[in-house]
Image (tube, rainbow, N blue to C red):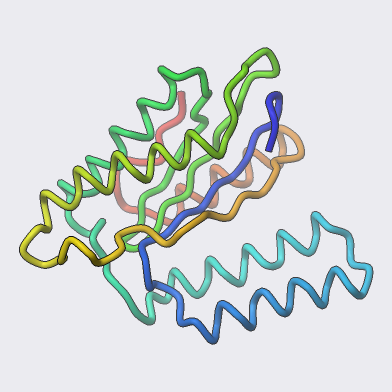
Length: 175
């Protein structure tokens, strides 16, 4: 993702998708690309399948069921505004989060360092809240994230409506 783009970003807690399922989903994505399916359509299909697995919560932690933990993550997402991003909205679910970010074209920032910093800051704060339950060597976030470029205002509206249906928290907010 580059300056001037808006992206739906999804990241999750470590171990929340069975390894075999993750391999199957990635193989399906590779097969779609090999078959010549449009890249956007293939990514959108992959995201829908991946998100459905996360929503079923077959395995892993559900730290963000805790209001305190969710508030930590929400606060850090809101702080992205102060670094130059436009946060269109976000949804925090028990084991993952969605956020829609826009990086203005004039910015010298990039998505990757911002999400890495978001992971680092929330992990440190959340570990303090779950210290007895999570050994220091245990991973908190799954490495990486999934992103999907938002094509236009209509798609942005659909994504924000989807996120609003996903959560009972006072998110997503829209700025």
